[in-house]
Amino acid sequence: MKQPATESQATSVIELRDIHKIYATGGGQQVHALRGVSLDFRNGESVALMGSSGSGKSTMMNLLGCLDRPSSGQFLLDGIDVSGLRREQLADLRNERLGFVFQNFNLLARTSALENVEMPMLYHRDSLSGKQMRQRALEALDRVGVADRAEHMPSQLSGGQQQRVAIARALVNQPRILLADEPTGNLDSSTTLEVMRLFQELITDGLTVILVTHEPELCRFLRRTLVLRDGQIIQDKRRDQVENAEQARQQLAALKQAEEAEDAK
Ligand SMILES: Nc1ncnc2c1ncn2[C@@H]1O[C@H](COP(=O)(O)OP(=O)(O)OP(=O)(O)O)[C@@H](O)[C@H]1O
Ligand SMILES: [Mg+2]
Image (cartoon, rainbow, N blue to C red):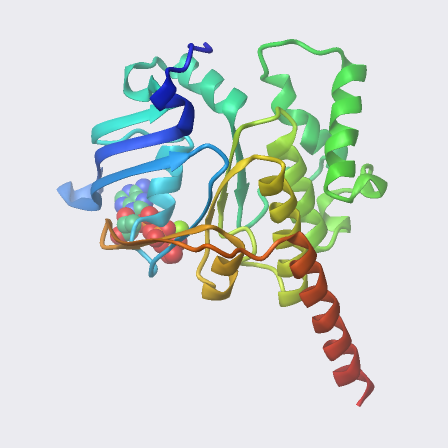
């Protein structure tokens, strides 16, 4: 599946050209959810995708994640034209290069944290032994700081821990791009900071991260902010200064102190 990247492709991991998405709903109605989106995402870039409810954020993430196809327009992933791929090729591409994190974690309920993380490897093309899968899954859980909860079921984990397991699952096939649709939407502020600190570490390690959020204060952790309205990009800004993992850690400590002081009252 890997194709040699030319100079120009080497810098863009994703190219969108005039992407439209039209949903057909029952009763013959149509929803024009994306209206001509053209964007480039560079390798290692960190992006916040914002916009009000219904503006097309999840639609765009589903297209970027090859979970759905555009109605028209061109989408290149690592220089590969996704529209020309068959279903299985698309699944391989998705499995090799993309990781997903969702707002509601999407973990399998009666399945341990470890087994949840092993799941994407079952579909991976290099077949691994059970032992290798277990080893990799444990490493991924360790990377996100929940290796000690490997045998727990999702219901036995806090929201933040469940999201960490979901992030471990997204990372286990070593993707180049991490797509996160409101990953902190169900988390309190200190858990949100913990998850953002984790994302910062991944960004520092060179992962491309695209994160949907409704919280403007999270944009300071990401280099680029995109705003969608009615299916169109209405703002595209880059910032020079981003807050790093250490700053997130400090803010987290300050927040915890403030909460403890509040509780002590
Ligand atoms: N499967 C679908 N079938 C029909 N219409 C859809 C479908 N998915 C989304 N839509 C419509 O497309 C538009 C964009 O929806 P989308 O889910 O992308 O919004 P969003 O920006 O993610 O919103 P939110 O912040 O509420 O998650 C909405 O008008 C929505 O109703
Ligand atoms: Mg959404």
